[in-house]
Amino acid sequence: MRKPDSVVPPRAATMAGRPVFDRLPSASTISGKIMSLFIVGSELPAKVPIADLRRDVTTLVNACLQLTARMLTGGDTAQPLAEVRADIMEWAREGVTIGAMHKAVRVGTQAVFDHLTARARLDEDHVAVIETAHMFVHLTRELSMAISQAYLREMRMADSAAADTVAAALIAGNATPAMARACGVRLAETYFVFAIQFMPPRSAGEPRPDRHILAHRTMRRVRAEVLHHCDDKALIQMGTDTATLLIPHDHFDPAGAERFVEQIADAAQTQVRATFVTAEAGGITAGVERTHAVLDIMRRLRRAGLERFDDLSLEYQLSRPGTAGRYLAALLDPLENHPVLLETLTAHLATRSTRLRTARALHVHPNTVDYRLNKIAEITGLDPTHPDGVWRLRSALVARATGAGEEESAAGGDPDQTAQAC
Figure 1: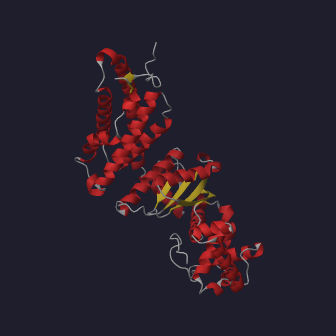
Figure 2: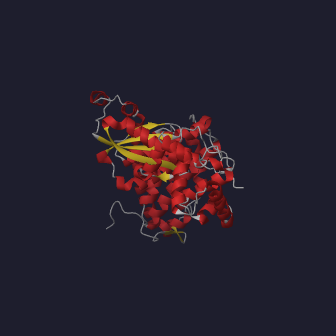
Figure 3: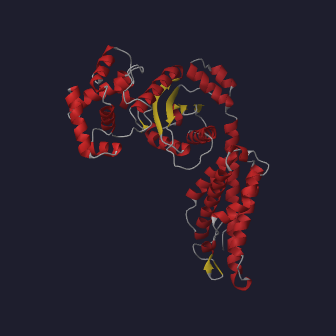
């Protein structure tokens, strides 16, 4: 006897001589039927271009169709179900009501079911119709649960103002256990202090929403990802292009830091820079200062991804004011009037002194890289192909790039914007 929660057996059901899963409609067919449910009586069209709304609706419908296809074929539904939850969360963040979302799902699933069974022959396909209807009951339940979970999490996020107050107080160094308790937060003894910077996305040549809308969306997605990863225990301070995360020590495994940063980058839909340190509750201010100083070093050295503080401790120390730093920075003074050579040196050191990678980064021939490295050695007296020269040049570049700005590289500009190679 079939279990109540079972779905159509893999590739078993057919209608009008074709497998049911092979009759699924296109996403555009369904999205057109539910588009109005998201925009009528909504403020979304005033905030987001209609083309973007249509694309987002189609993305949600695609995810639901993929989930339906997996159910029809008996495949693993974990990944498409996770994508559906993520898409629903996006709409919840945009202010679409839970009622509108439930109605959209009902309209969409009904449209798909009608499309699948439109050519069913009652005398031959009645079993397949029953199987398909049974699967759609299961699908509707899964989608309803996804909606409830997404909107419940959104409600929790919307009530995060008190936790944000505690985060700000910890970062400023004036948080107290009593104040935290009044905000519904229990202070941990030790935190992982994360600093994250969101890099400007590369232009894809297509119209994009207003940057303030994009920043708002990014912040909401990142906040949701962080809270999900840390069981809602993280304290967060968000800026327009940076975030500071305070994660209680017992709610984060540093061995998974790389994956955590990748998930944040996925949520932000752009590359990120990130670093972290461990700090006691009373030392959060100093920890935040250190991590954001490392972010600045990463920006100037054009590093992306996660860099552990220990791995950049030398660069951090060289960036501190002092005679040694000024001496090291002065080693590059002979290159002051050679911005192309400075650019080449920066790229060469960023690629771990690999000429082929340097050539690819600068979009030039490897022989051009060799010529420029020889010129650097000739002008500075330091060979960028020799270990001792690499160490001194790297130290000089760090000291120069992070030396309070008064000796900014002649290459100038925002290090996030790739310089044009000559």
